[in-house]
Amino acid sequence: MGEFNIYGVYVPAFLIQAILAYILFKVVVIGLDYLVEKNWIIFPAIFNLCVYLILLCGMHWLFIGLGL
Image 1 (cartoon, rainbow, N blue to C red):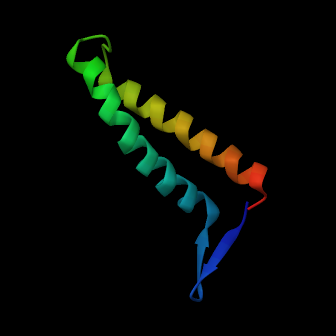
Image 2: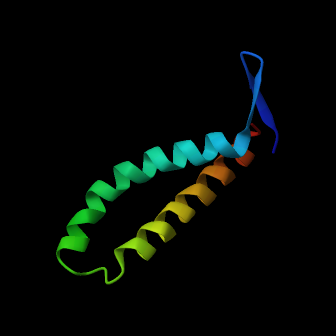
């Protein structure tokens, strides 16, 4: 892990990963809302948190794999 220098401002790599995971999460939630409406997901807030954490972990491994 490290940081990126964007116009003289050091931005942590984890912040960029979190933002990208959140954008991907918003896209995935559109499809998951159908399951919430059909009551297939009992606790949607906990489920959404778990989905975000899985996406964040995947984004972290993607950054490590690419060597960023």
